[in-house]
Amino acid sequence: MNEEAAETAEEATGLIGWILNHGRVRSVFNEMQAEVSVPPGKVLAFLVANMTRWTTHFVAFDRLCDLKDPLRRAVISRREDIISGQVGAEKNRQKKQKLENDAIAHCELIDDGGFWRRLKVVVDDLEPICLGINLNQTDALCPNQALLTFAGIFLYFQKHSKPVVASGMMKRIEKHWKALDQPMFILSLVLNPFEGISCFGEKAAVSPFTLNTILLEVCLFYLSISNFYFNSLNCKTYRRVCSRPPKVPRSEEEEDEYNAVQVRKEREVSESFLSYLSSKGPFEDWEKNKKSFQSIHVSFRYKKAIRWHSHHLETTGDQSPRHVESIPDNASCLRTRQLRITATWHVSKSGQVGAQFL
Image (tube, rainbow, N blue to C red):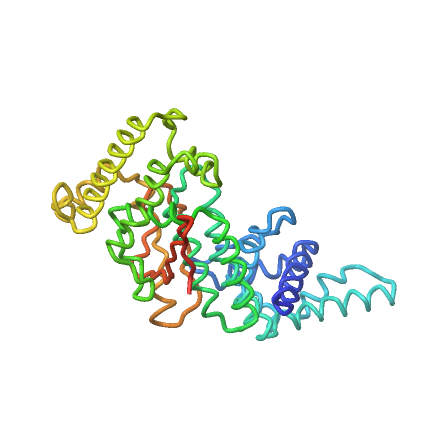
């Protein structure tokens, strides 16, 4: 999908391997690091990507970008030392020339500003994906966090400078999002009191009544359907939502009684949900007590987690997400106040509810 990025990744991998495979060459670069680093004497290691752990490519490339300045300084001021360091004591004329050409080619690559610009784009493209993977592979991940990672990655690639990459990644994200239980993920975000509906933009057309309908469709719709639906396609969903289905068959009186109970439950849930959305009743003093609740119930790692500054994507046009110093592991810890999820809602005749990013 992005041949230029693939070529740049190969060049970066080859450059890292070349440096690590030649001790004298690496010593020249390390000496330059120690000379220009702050504080002086600090030397960072060159990292190698693991072929079976593709997220390590991001770490290796990101470190290479951090070492751009000392590498280019060394190539400019100590090119002869680099070439002689690779050639070593080789006496064979042909082999010596081949080693010299190899060293010169790598020096030219390091001195190529276009290579570093392309590598920066590769690193920026990998970063939101790697962040999403690190979040989603933990057992402590909450559905609302998973939804925000999907939305964050989508918004990043939506504004990608290459239309082909933007279109391809958006289609892939939509494909994976479509395979998920969308209403459950969306409701988990809405029911997170730290987020509520603040993450939804104007195009999402989200209203309390729309969300109330979705909640009832997901949680209670399958509790009030007739015997026909128990044996239909909705059976799996019903068994997943309700762990104690009513006995079948039932008499007419039992059916009426059961439906009356379900209607009452739907009304109670609906009233509670609307009170939550409007901050009324038991939820009225949430804003006043939010900080104290957070200090008691939210983990220490959440407090130290770096926010994903997605507002850079919207306000400054900067397509590079900020670095994450620690991976959060608690509900509502992925703080993206400026993130706006744009979605269209649709409720089909079969009761299936879905949302699609725009």
